[in-house]
Length: 158
View 1 (cartoon, rainbow, N blue to C red):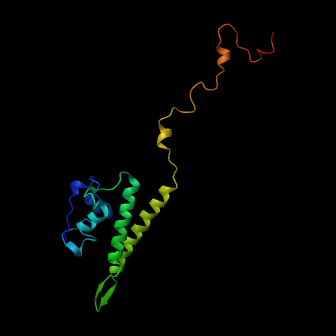
View 2: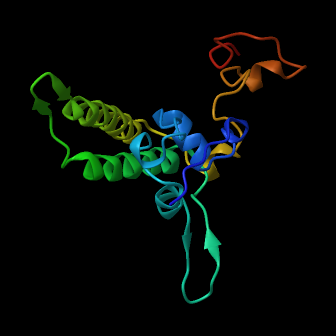
């Protein structure tokens, strides 16, 4: 298992950006300090079609990234769920707080995803049509005819 992090690649929509956004950037200690290994991040962010051998990445868009972040957090929570608080005389390990932090982050991302489903969006086909409302749409074009003076009571006058 490898544990790498390159801060120059945090805009690359890959494991480095995911590590940065989740705060899993301390890779010097390996498995002791990192939540997931590089291969585990790659398994969630990238997949390969076994029949064709083509490697795929995430779909473009914010929702796909949020879902990937949610799946990474689920994997972290499953990995840390067996760790408990331990106290031996004066020595104590508070590993439950670590799992609680990841759980809070998971709930926050989950709420963001649920909130994004409630927002309406415009259909792509409708975006390329001219606007329904336009300047002068309420003007009377009959009143602009040159040979008749404008009068709101034109039909009544003979």
